[in-house]
Length: 193
View 1 (cartoon, rainbow, N blue to C red):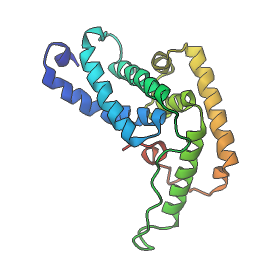
View 2 (view 1 turned 45 degrees about the horizontal axis):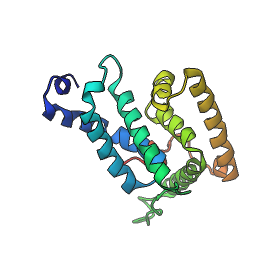
View 3 (view 1 turned 135 degrees about the horizontal axis):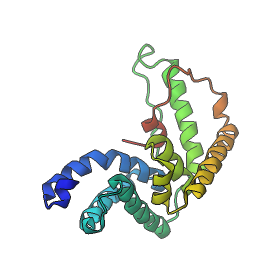
């Protein structure tokens, strides 16, 4: 970012490369549509580049970028109604019994249940959970991105976790045995690339 702010426009490509995946994952949690997410990621980077003069280097670029992306996602959501279920692909057909064992299938089914439960949560709950658990953002950074106070963000995270648990119990996802030694992949669960 220092090079970009100093006028080296080519350096911004490195910024895009570094933050693309994280921004994509965050915006997907808001839009629940891969095509719209790809478009919005590009628009967010373009808007950030155009607004570089407004960026204060004393603060996290990622927080600033996610804030821009969130505001643009809200505009998209206002223009359309958000779908109830995201476009999670169907379970792949196993090539053979040895490579696609029972554990892989159970993990996939558990991920689908979690994805369905997340899709039913309000958008602000999904955003807060994504930023905290996947992006590992601090409560203060999440508060800045979401435009809330730190206390309000803590309350939001608490409510989001409880709502997710209720949805998972309703979907009976917690009763599916998933071996603890094989944790679910955040990309599969939360819609990353």
